[in-house]
Amino acid sequence: MAEKIVSPPQLVKRKSSDASSQGRSAPRPPARRRRIPYTRAEIAEIFRRFAVQRPEPKGELEHSNPFTLLVAVVLSAQATDVGVNKATRELFKIADTPQKMAALGEEAIREHIRTIGLYRNKAKNVAALARTLVEQHGGDVPRDRAGLEALPGVGRKTASVVLNSAFGEETLAVDTHILRLGNRLKLAPGKTPEAVETGLLQVIPQAYLRHAHHWLILHGRYVCKARKPDCEACAIADLCKADVKTCDVPAPLRELPPGLLPDPTGSG
Ligand code: SF4
Image (cartoon, protein in one colour):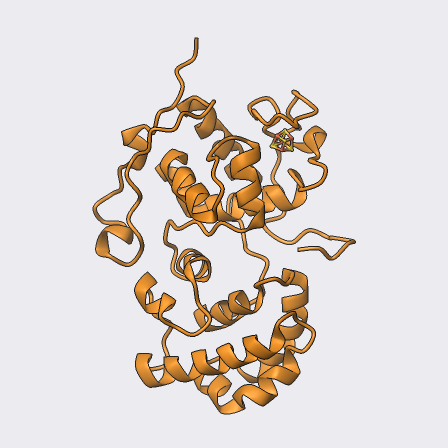
């Protein structure tokens, strides 16, 4: 019988030269004892296939630098990436730095993002965020979790996205798709985003951590969808242990677009 994983210590180890060991990101959590129904080889194979599909995956929030990414992520709470991109396209044309955004001011920011949910509060946060970056960080976005999470409107998830996408760190921000996949696939069962984050960080092989965040989001968004997973189109159908799985034959493994696919529903 195949060996099952119990928090393998070799998957937890990090290189001494990586970002987290320098205190720029949360250290990988200690091994947990929960059993999951996959062997190490199966998990490695799942992520190998994700890597073949998208060697260089991209997030779907449009941005041109760490600051515009940070603002886009702050705006994306309870909004779709498509909706955020529509609003930020014009906003970032006139304010793509903290200095320009601070000069623009809350009222003008509010006008630009009116189409996004919670826009009043978000405009307030973005204006305060820009001012704080100018006054306390010389106009730079901090590269460490503590510095990011101290900014107005920035929580753990936003900080993780920025650390991963702007600074290349091996963080994993658990959104609705990753929360669902962690539980549905039984890779990292957990009731909270933090629990799923901890579980995933423990089982995903080190070599795949850099892009795991985007691979899982894109897989959840386009294949393993919330209401009806598209198992016939799934390249890991033979490995998946989800109860809802409807097919055991994996879809052909081929490279896919790195980010946004046409989405007729516009759903995020
Ligand atoms: S086989 Fe189905 S349930 Fe499993 S990951 Fe693929 S789409 Fe999701």
